[in-house]
Amino acid sequence: MIPAYTLQQGLPERLRAEAAELYWEAFGSKLGRVLGPKPKAMAYLYRVIRADHVLVALSRDGHLMGLAGFKTPQASFVAGGLTDLRAGYGLIGGTWRARLLSWLSTEVDNENFLLDGLCVAADWRGQGLGTALLGAICAEAQSRGYGSVRLDVVDSNWRAHALYRRLGFVETRRQSIGLLRHVFRFDSAITMVHRI
Image (cartoon, rainbow, N blue to C red; front, top):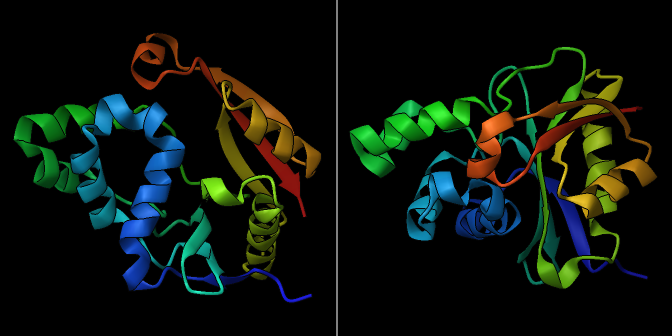
Protein backbone atom coordinates (compact mmCIF):
# COMPACT_ATOMS: atom_id res chain seq x y z
CA MET A 1 0.00 0.00 0.00
CA ILE A 2 1.33 3.47 -0.92
CA PRO A 3 1.44 5.77 2.11
CA ALA A 4 -0.88 8.78 1.98
CA TYR A 5 2.02 11.06 2.87
CA THR A 6 5.76 11.48 2.58
CA LEU A 7 8.14 12.60 5.29
CA GLN A 8 10.98 14.97 4.49
CA GLN A 9 13.44 17.22 6.22
CA GLY A 10 12.94 20.92 5.63
CA LEU A 11 9.91 23.07 4.95
CA PRO A 12 9.28 24.11 1.34
CA GLU A 13 8.98 27.89 1.16
CA ARG A 14 5.52 27.66 -0.43
CA LEU A 15 4.25 25.99 2.78
CA ARG A 16 5.51 28.60 5.24
CA ALA A 17 2.02 30.08 5.76
CA GLU A 18 0.49 26.60 6.23
CA ALA A 19 3.18 25.80 8.80
CA ALA A 20 2.49 29.02 10.72
CA GLU A 21 -1.25 28.22 10.71
CA LEU A 22 -0.67 24.62 11.86
CA TYR A 23 1.68 25.75 14.63
CA TRP A 24 -0.84 28.33 15.82
CA GLU A 25 -3.62 25.73 15.75
CA ALA A 26 -1.52 23.49 18.00
CA PHE A 27 -0.09 26.10 20.37
CA GLY A 28 -2.36 29.14 20.08
CA SER A 29 -4.29 28.28 23.24
CA LYS A 30 -1.02 28.41 25.17
CA LEU A 31 0.54 31.39 23.37
CA GLY A 32 -2.57 33.38 22.43
CA ARG A 33 -2.45 35.89 25.25
CA VAL A 34 1.19 36.69 24.44
CA LEU A 35 1.38 36.43 20.64
CA GLY A 36 -2.21 37.32 19.78
CA PRO A 37 -4.20 38.61 18.13
CA LYS A 38 -4.05 35.87 15.52
CA PRO A 39 -3.14 38.05 12.48
CA LYS A 40 -0.11 39.42 14.34
CA ALA A 41 0.83 35.94 15.53
CA MET A 42 0.63 34.60 11.97
CA ALA A 43 2.89 37.38 10.68
CA TYR A 44 5.36 36.76 13.51
CA LEU A 45 5.43 32.99 12.99
CA TYR A 46 5.76 33.41 9.23
CA ARG A 47 8.79 35.62 9.84
CA VAL A 48 10.61 33.44 12.40
CA ILE A 49 10.03 29.83 11.30
CA ARG A 50 13.32 28.13 10.43
CA ALA A 51 12.69 25.90 7.42
CA ASP A 52 15.87 23.91 8.12
CA HIS A 53 14.83 22.90 11.66
CA VAL A 54 11.74 20.83 10.91
CA LEU A 55 10.58 17.51 9.54
CA VAL A 56 7.32 17.65 7.60
CA ALA A 57 4.64 15.24 6.43
CA LEU A 58 3.23 16.13 3.02
CA SER A 59 0.10 14.76 1.37
CA ARG A 60 0.29 13.32 -2.15
CA ASP A 61 -0.93 16.66 -3.50
CA GLY A 62 1.74 18.59 -1.57
CA HIS A 63 -0.21 19.96 1.40
CA LEU A 64 1.23 20.10 4.88
CA MET A 65 -0.28 17.39 7.08
CA GLY A 66 2.03 17.65 10.06
CA LEU A 67 5.39 18.82 11.28
CA ALA A 68 7.95 18.16 13.98
CA GLY A 69 10.23 21.07 14.74
CA PHE A 70 13.55 20.60 16.50
CA LYS A 71 16.12 22.68 18.30
CA THR A 72 19.90 22.56 17.88
CA PRO A 73 22.65 24.65 19.48
CA GLN A 74 22.42 26.89 16.37
CA ALA A 75 18.68 27.59 16.26
CA SER A 76 15.17 26.27 16.81
CA PHE A 77 12.15 25.80 14.57
CA VAL A 78 10.40 28.90 15.92
CA ALA A 79 13.50 31.05 16.28
CA GLY A 80 12.21 34.54 16.99
CA GLY A 81 13.83 37.00 19.32
CA LEU A 82 13.43 40.53 20.61
CA THR A 83 14.09 42.13 17.20
CA ASP A 84 11.42 39.96 15.55
CA LEU A 85 8.90 40.66 18.30
CA ARG A 86 9.50 44.41 18.11
CA ALA A 87 9.12 44.29 14.32
CA GLY A 88 5.68 42.73 14.67
CA TYR A 89 4.37 44.25 17.89
CA GLY A 90 6.25 47.54 18.27
CA LEU A 91 8.85 48.60 20.82
CA ILE A 92 6.71 48.24 23.94
CA GLY A 93 4.59 45.30 22.75
CA GLY A 94 7.64 43.41 21.54
CA THR A 95 9.56 44.03 24.75
CA TRP A 96 6.95 42.74 27.18
CA ARG A 97 6.23 39.76 24.94
CA ALA A 98 9.95 38.88 24.83
CA ARG A 99 10.09 39.06 28.61
CA LEU A 100 7.15 36.70 29.06
CA LEU A 101 8.35 34.24 26.41
CA SER A 102 11.82 34.13 28.00
CA TRP A 103 10.25 32.37 30.99
CA LEU A 104 9.34 29.43 28.78
CA SER A 105 12.09 26.93 28.04
CA THR A 106 14.83 28.50 25.91
CA GLU A 107 17.64 26.24 27.00
CA VAL A 108 19.85 24.18 24.73
CA ASP A 109 20.51 20.59 25.73
CA ASN A 110 23.78 19.14 24.49
CA GLU A 111 22.95 15.62 25.68
CA ASN A 112 19.46 15.21 24.22
CA PHE A 113 18.03 16.10 20.82
CA LEU A 114 15.21 18.59 21.47
CA LEU A 115 11.76 18.38 19.93
CA ASP A 116 10.46 21.92 19.33
CA GLY A 117 6.79 21.38 18.56
CA LEU A 118 4.81 18.49 17.10
CA CYS A 119 1.70 19.45 15.11
CA VAL A 120 -0.70 17.31 13.10
CA ALA A 121 -3.53 18.80 11.01
CA ALA A 122 -6.98 18.09 12.46
CA ASP A 123 -8.04 15.86 9.53
CA TRP A 124 -5.05 13.60 10.06
CA ARG A 125 -5.09 13.12 13.82
CA GLY A 126 -5.54 9.61 15.15
CA GLN A 127 -4.10 7.99 12.00
CA GLY A 128 -0.51 7.42 13.11
CA LEU A 129 1.02 10.57 11.67
CA GLY A 130 2.22 11.84 15.07
CA THR A 131 3.88 8.49 15.68
CA ALA A 132 5.55 8.62 12.26
CA LEU A 133 6.84 12.15 12.87
CA LEU A 134 8.23 11.15 16.27
CA GLY A 135 9.92 8.17 14.65
CA ALA A 136 11.48 10.53 12.10
CA ILE A 137 12.66 12.83 14.90
CA CYS A 138 14.30 9.87 16.64
CA ALA A 139 16.02 8.89 13.38
CA GLU A 140 17.18 12.50 12.89
CA ALA A 141 18.54 12.55 16.43
CA GLN A 142 20.41 9.30 15.86
CA SER A 143 21.89 10.55 12.59
CA ARG A 144 23.24 13.58 14.48
CA GLY A 145 24.86 11.38 17.13
CA TYR A 146 22.35 11.78 19.95
CA GLY A 147 21.31 8.87 22.14
CA SER A 148 18.02 10.36 23.28
CA VAL A 149 15.23 12.79 22.39
CA ARG A 150 13.78 15.26 24.88
CA LEU A 151 10.51 17.17 24.76
CA ASP A 152 8.37 19.33 26.99
CA VAL A 153 4.60 18.94 27.10
CA VAL A 154 2.11 20.99 29.10
CA ASP A 155 0.20 19.20 31.83
CA SER A 156 -3.17 19.95 30.22
CA ASN A 157 -2.28 18.21 26.94
CA TRP A 158 -3.14 14.72 28.14
CA ARG A 159 -3.52 13.34 24.60
CA ALA A 160 0.08 14.24 23.65
CA HIS A 161 1.35 13.04 27.03
CA ALA A 162 -0.30 9.65 26.47
CA LEU A 163 1.19 9.37 22.96
CA TYR A 164 4.68 10.15 24.21
CA ARG A 165 4.39 7.63 27.05
CA ARG A 166 3.11 4.97 24.66
CA LEU A 167 6.15 5.54 22.42
CA GLY A 168 8.64 5.12 25.25
CA PHE A 169 9.14 8.67 26.53
CA VAL A 170 9.66 8.80 30.29
CA GLU A 171 8.82 11.76 32.50
CA THR A 172 11.99 13.16 34.06
CA ARG A 173 10.78 16.47 35.50
CA ARG A 174 7.63 18.45 36.16
CA GLN A 175 8.03 22.19 36.63
CA SER A 176 5.31 24.56 37.79
CA ILE A 177 5.10 27.93 36.04
CA GLY A 178 3.51 29.60 39.05
CA LEU A 179 1.56 32.77 38.39
CA LEU A 180 2.36 32.58 34.68
CA ARG A 181 -0.37 29.93 34.48
CA HIS A 182 -2.82 32.81 34.14
CA VAL A 183 -1.00 33.97 30.99
CA PHE A 184 -0.15 30.65 29.34
CA ARG A 185 -3.19 28.63 30.52
CA PHE A 186 -1.36 25.62 31.94
CA ASP A 187 0.05 24.84 35.38
CA SER A 188 3.25 22.95 34.69
CA ALA A 189 5.57 21.72 31.97
CA ILE A 190 6.48 18.04 31.87
CA THR A 191 9.90 17.08 30.53
CA MET A 192 10.06 13.65 28.90
CA VAL A 193 13.04 11.76 27.46
CA HIS A 194 13.21 8.79 25.09
CA ARG A 195 16.40 6.74 24.75
CA ILE A 196 17.11 5.64 21.16
